[in-house]
Length: 500
Ligand code: GDG
Image 1 (cartoon, rainbow, N blue to C red):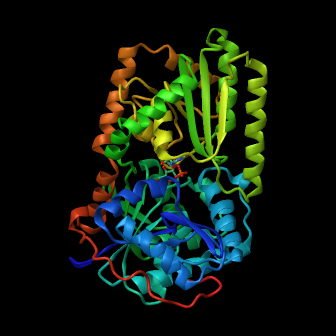
Image 2 (cartoon, rainbow, N blue to C red; image 1 turned 90 degrees about the vertical axis):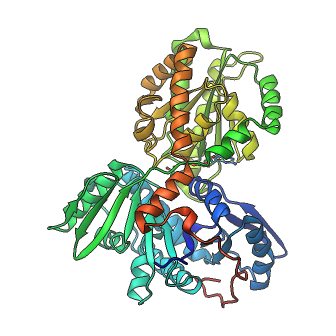
Image 3 (cartoon, helix red, strand yellow; image 1 turned 90 degrees about the horizontal axis):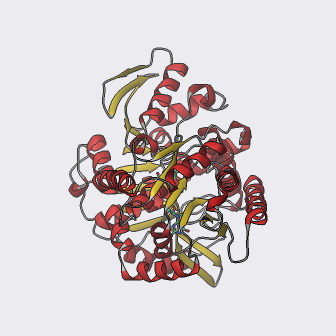
């Protein structure tokens, strides 16, 4: 890489999505942890983002220019769309990404469907992404590929003779060998990962799982070094492997939490839900997030502690996600049945114990809920990091909140001393943790929350990116040029699964 290399992000989704139908297109920001973490970085530095638009409708080139051009200008970086057909979305996105890698990497093998056609689609779509990278980048650029949908990009680029410095970050956990080895395409996927010069994981545990898999599949694999970055050599390849926990834009959340707009919403919420204790859960609809177990824990708590009836209210916000996948529809029904059963058991005139919202809410409102809540229940069965945990703590203006955190969330590696850790499968254990949280003395709560918050402030998302770039390229974030905004993507033909 030379001095002039630009920062290029490649991810399945662009930070904005196109919705609607011909003549009626709408561009909205995408949600999710990856976008929350990386948007502020690119906004700050400029650069390029390559990803899918989120629609499989055919959008004409002229229209794409018209809608993405101004969005690109507003964002301060260039977005280059990759177009996917309905079939690709079905087999690559819903299929291989979400019915193979997602459940397997979250240790939930029973949700996996190892269909060979999913694998074919996964490689085909990754070839389209690799083609987009080749087209829109230069040799000196730093290509930073994100997450499990895009693992093969570097190997495909190399095989086609394209030279780029490619690094990868996995946002979800990496499983232990006894789980990973079940994957029918395990050798290929590991070799794909080994084509990156640098691979980052969220926690030391994920990195160890990865290096254990290298040892299990490639006899003679060697791991050397200590600290956050180690060297790995296996199957004739050399790479560096890191454990680097992602974070959030601390300052922007903190400023928003104190803003007049959030205070106004907060006052309104306090009037509408005038309870002594508010407990909050915020998750995408996903079977990895442990939502049913959490609602059962609230039920156990209210059964075991009648003194908190009419005093404690649980608010669960569920953001719609992957609604076309049958197991997600089943999960939604299960959650809704549980909510109504708990409400049926305990409600009294004027008090409903569980407030359930199935929708995405504006960020200001989300932050107002963070401020409203006396405690947050972040209890995923397994999670790469979990940014909600960090956002909740950042928004505790008086440091009075308590975080109950799953020991299987990546965030637990950093927050295990100050949060109350729980086994998310242990409903009674979560109920006990809720009791410990609502009875915790104020000074203790404040001291613990303050320590967490100071940690997030120090190790915020800019720290994460800077560390990642320094470790992988030797350059800091500020060394990347603020990219002069090139013309909004060049006209290209559309293939069934092709780039724009
Ligand atoms: C993946 C990994 C890893 C949620 N509801 C609303 C809303 N959100 C935002 C939150 C947060 C993000 O979505 C969710 O982030 P998570 O980290 O919890 O989860 P994933 O989407 O599964 O992300 C995860 C992450 O990547 C980053 O590496 O931590 O482990 O699975 O930022 O604020 N935002 C708005 N309205 C909502 O209703 N505006």
